Length: 110
Image (cartoon, rainbow, N blue to C red; front, side):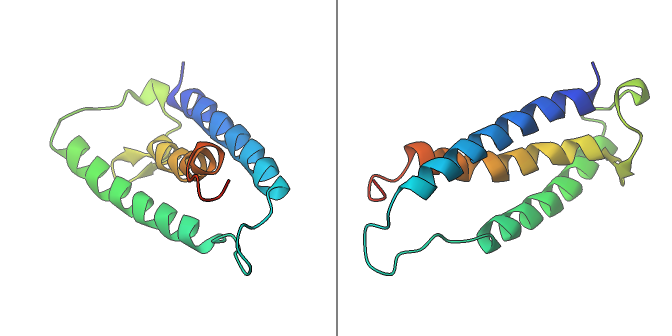
């Protein structure tokens, strides 16, 4: 199994959860006048921050020898020493966590 296939599993789960959350959120009505969703900006900013942190710290950990990737299991595309597959996990987190918050989080929104 390649890392790309493994990361695709996580991304598919995150996207499915986000799709369910969007449908649930669309059915809810705002609880207070003028209330509106936060939009895409916070998600994009979080994704950029996580990608930068992933790039920095994955490269440091790989360079220091904490772990290594077999070339047979990665796509070959890298950001420095880090394979691009490593960036799928922060992306899945940015997609999945707001979806879970929408589905199970704030009681005020219910």
